[in-house]
Length: 120
Length: 160
Image (cartoon, rainbow over all chains, first blue to last red; front, side, top):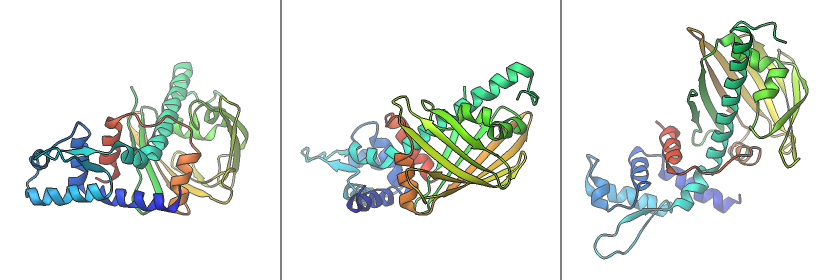
C-alpha cells in the first residue's frame, strides 16, 4: 500500500471514529436512504446529520446521487472493503484458529476426561 | 457452537487485542499452548500445515516453526518466550521470516473463570502502525469480506 492510500485510509478511519457516523454506515449497509430517513433515529438536528454525511462523503465512504429532490445517500462498498479487508482477514484466521483449539481440547477431554494430563 | 472472539484494533496505536473464552479448564488451555504436539494441531491458519523445528514454552525458551500452504508455499516464524508462568501468563516475541526485524511482542493472559471455564486475553504490540497493518495483511492467508454483517461487527467492535 503506498502513502496516498494511507492518507485515504486515515481519512476513512477518522470519519468512522464517531458513533453517529458508524450508525449511519450501519443503516446504509441495508440500502440507500435520504437525509430525513437517516436523521430519524437520532435526537440531533437534520443539519447535524447532514454534516456527518458530508464527512463520510469526503472520506468517500458514501456517495449521493442527484436523484431529483431526494438525493439518497449510498454506501461506497469499495472504500469500506479497503478499510476492513485486513481486519477481516485477521479475524477470520484467529477465529478459525480458536475453533481448531476448541477441537483439540474436545478430543483430549473425550479421550481421558478433562484431566488427561498424561496424554503426551 | 463456539465462543465469540472479541477483537479490538485501536486507531493510532499499533496494538491488536483479542479475548476469547473456552469451555475448558485453564490448565487444559495452557497445556494446549505449551505442548508442541498440541500446538501443531491448532496454531495458525486452518488450511496450513504446521511443522515445528523447536518449541520450548518456558521462560527463556524459544520457538521456530513453518506453516505450509496447500500450494506448497512456506512461511517461517520464530520468537522467544520471555516469561511463561503456568496457567497464568506468557510474554513472547513473534517474527515472520518474510519481514525480518519487524518483531511484535505478545502478552497472553490465562484466566480461570471457575466451573471448568477460562478466558484467554492477548495483546500484540507492533513496532509501528505499518507493521501492524502490513503483518495482518500479508502474513495471513484467509478469505475476504463476508458481507455487511461482518462489517457491522467490525464497526461496532472498533470503538465502543
